[in-house]
Image (cartoon, rainbow, N blue to C red):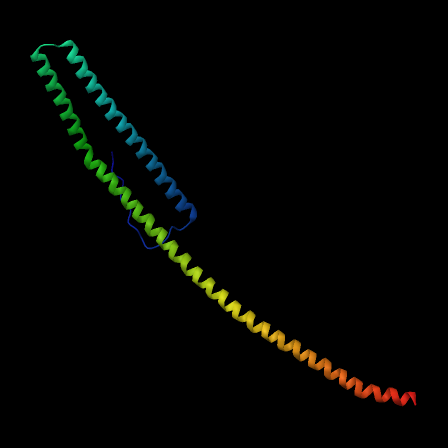
Length: 175
């Protein structure tokens, strides 16, 4: 199996959401293929173990003399040895695949960390804006109350002026 090239993280986010989605889709497909391969490997191992066990049972029933039993035990040990050697040969490839997956997870973590920091900064800015808006609202409310009080004072003054001007005039007209 060819080892995929490791990508290095650059401190910039993908250029478009489409590229990020494509990268995630590719990673998901690779992950599914790896899971399927792991399942098949496990199935092969179970089948090999079952075959070995059946060979053992068959050998016990068909071969009753000591030489055949020793030969069977040798075959069993030989099969186990071959299985261990096969597993050992797969180990570097499995380690390489695990390292690749770790690197991909590191990249994703760094990407999520970048976006988290960006969202956090935006959240802080929004909180500052909300605070400033509350202060401005408080100031505008105070200003509105002062204007309403001033309007009431002006109304009262106009009412007093009206009473002072028009009441004497009305009395003169009545006379």
